[in-house]
Length: 267
Image 1: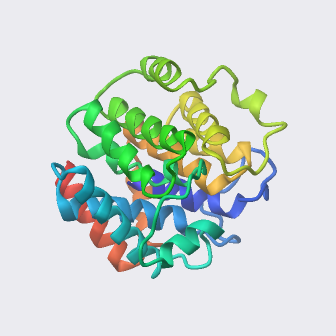
Image 2 (image 1 turned 135 degrees about the vertical axis):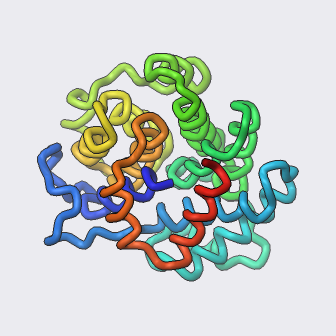
């Protein structure tokens, strides 16, 4: 999960198109408030839910725990940063999905890509994680595609293979380069206009840091886009130890404990 969380932190100061669309910036800028956002909180919630019920839990059990942990963590961390409809969902006594195609389903899914021993199971649980809120086909597609890519990358598949799989299975247009995306790209919160761009930033990256820089340089919903890119980059490149320490320095103790437990389970 380090990759997703670092992406969230590094991208957060540039959300709402506040960057200059350059790769030349200080990663952990001392003049900016580098912190986690709702993207990290929900990533942590999904990881905790899986650990609570186990990887063999059925759909009803898994979905119930996803809801429980997202509501618990969401109501205690990153308050005020969630979208309007999701904020309401967090407070409902009987929360129901609301047909969203927002990129929240894709940004919170990275833990699922690390937990399961088959691509089919990975996609199944990713779908469940989306359906509790983002049950629009595009919301589900965003979650499944990101989790599937992480699963394939961590199991040694090449970028070319994964890129073609995403195109074939999910129909995303991955033909544009970052240079072609960057000039007209703007803040947008849909899966369909975030996931392909985040993936392109990763596919063009030469290492973890370069992938992150690519994502930030695109602008847009930068914490979420870079969160997704970072999750993919971790699965392929790994994360430098110095970056992990920077991450831990900015997290509450509860999140650190969950990350430690999750790493013990998956590595």
